Image 1 (cartoon, one colour):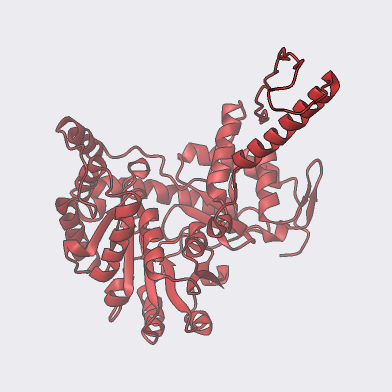
Image 2 (cartoon, rainbow, N blue to C red; image 1 turned 135 degrees about the vertical axis):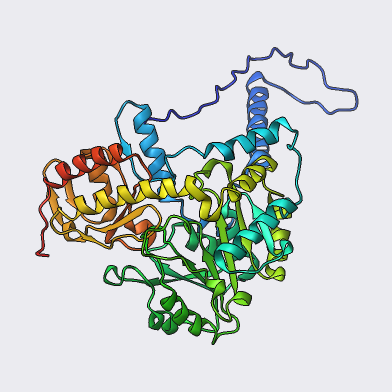
Length: 466
């Protein structure tokens, strides 16, 4: 897609008429003027004035070093690229974005529309409406075994805002944020925005991408401030069993300064026999945990932008300060819709279970088909709606008409070009061996994508034995 440069038409100045003085002004000495000298002096004056104006009008275009250090989201970049190609007439299948293809359940949408009709369109309290915060407290008690009061809950414009504010509230420049990889693309950038240093803890596909307690213990220092856990995981779909979380909690307990941010946004998208455990529910962890959840994924409410943080009051108050100066409260309409979502029943009731059943069918189809590809390694996801597939055995392959597949990024470029399927390279998630595939798309769409991927990968021969 070509972009034309912007240009400003130059204004042409007409030559003004002037008369040379024939006699000096009273009191002036005898001065001789020629037309050439007059024009020369006027030209020099114009040059000087133009230089002065340019200096006065010059804009300092420098950007804050913290912002300059941020990396743009590859997930969003690839999604935008796929959209642009589709608009240009290229039939690209986009499997990059983590957005359910389902419509928001009707009862939730109706609650939002009723909020508009009933005039619930004004500012709400910064922390969220009392009725919604009470409903969140009830949900956390009944489903997660967590006890909070409304003043320990902060409703925000999506879980992403909750996480960003939490990192900003508890981290100082020089602190370290511990992040298991593969990770959600935004975690390290949030740490950098707070002036903290992201410390990446690699995991292995042979361990289902779960953090080993020994790996955690080996990197903790006096600078370690925050450990971020995401279960079920984006991008791997891994679910931490309670026993493993208890081992991690035993290590965290040894370090008074170390906190845990538990990202539980995919909590309800989980496949039997896996079970979700809230980290704050583990013995001794309530005081040290900031729990983040929301409505986007399980309730197919991505565009409603609604999430929440539950934590000890001093942490919630600090996050509330940021929010009050940043965005203020979440949409009043979205909060009414969120209340309706929580009233659907335990774990979202039938509306959510129907979507989860469809996600599981899609997962099973993709896992079965990708296992037919030679050289591919898969850890079967236990939750969320992502596959993180190891294609590294293909790196180094030469493909006629394309070139060398060097890494996850060139593999995704190859699949976009040859298969017209948009995926996200694993280097965006801190693991270049893999590629993330979102199966938050109709089964028929996934079947078309799978056929195209198989045809494209048939052109590639793994350069190493697997």
